[in-house]
Length: 578
Image (cartoon, rainbow, N blue to C red; front, side):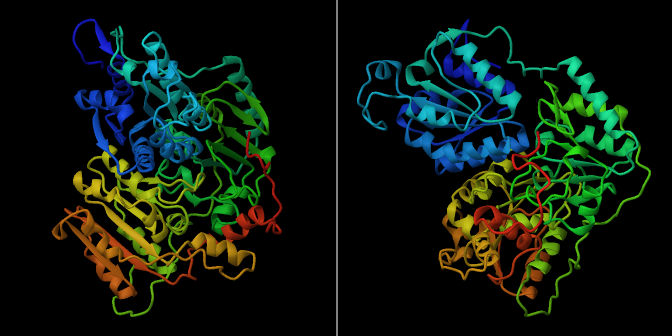
């Protein structure tokens, strides 16, 4: 879709049309003088809405959350301070495999050609400093000219879609308004490359590995979510009767209400029944998984010789790599030749250990053991759940998601402050779906501003904020190495329940604080399935109390960070799976 009259369009219209062809319906960003030519045309373009953000970092996080629901996202910033502020979010999208298009309005080509001393520069005539920096956190980059606009836009967007990672497009002001021929056809998403001989060789090797297997298991990560492989995985598990475990990043791909779902696998952090299924398997098919220090890299008892690993564009069997092979093609072959599992495996392993019913008469403090089953009971089919790194992330691992729910978290990049802007973006993309955000006081202090846009867009979200007086992950790491808290993990205690009044009138929201189990029970009981107002719940907990799995994680992470003794011998290569 490229709007405009006649046989030509502007370069900005060309780019916007190609983004629309890919599915972009909103662009998040912050205006700036160098970007005005482009943003003016965004405002005039039919089919894509401009959404202003409080700052560029929030814009990046918002586009990330949007992309995880809509399939792709886009941000627009200006040269220098704007684009640099967004780099952290782009790095997170790079690490987490999220396709985000970063569009930067730049100085005119004449300004750059003459090496002019202008603001937002080092006054050294080099206008590519920031583009080179962006090259480290994106998979493709370009600075558009009128002459190469169509070719370069299609090349860079093609890489964004194929690799499911962020890209960088600089559009100088004069280029944004330059006229170019109207494209003859819409943008076509590139087809993945398949080497037929390599696919056959992979299938043969996989068949040998699967021969005689009696306890196979599927372990899913985040990449198949990006590639839309949920139905294929569901059909595989159903027809071959295989159990399915998920990494934290892979949650939402497979229905957790399905009896074949066994839980979240994260090495020693996992529940015993999940480890029994995954580590006791004679073949583990890893589908788009990523092992890092946060999810079992150093403690997973997985024999690499028993692993069939399916990556985005290659596959391996016991370490032997085959490619290029698209993940969908490799999964299709495995489905054809996989054995049907006949042995039983532990069931119900993701059920909460405690009842979700809170004690309405208890004046005792709220514990994590009681909190997370109660939040799990709050969730409904189709919800989008967004969890902050740290306490909220581990709490989410304890919960079982309802059918059709999506889970968004960013543990690889682990940048606190992700949740509020990402939840807003996910709400824009998933219009009509309820968004439940779970964050901490540390994350809330970093990026609360997009709550204002939640009100502006009428999002009746639920925000649960765990107030433990600081950064729980830092405290856990200190405890794991036997250190006393040094005080840097503590933060100022805001009046969080008053925060929403900055963004909206008192009658537009519900903001309550729970310090006892009885207070929390009353608050959660009052939350409607389809609330008409945004609901903010502050949950005050003991700073020393942590969710299940967090102590094990802290020991594992401290082994890498502080060079402590590893709690278990590593079986996987430290560089991850190939």
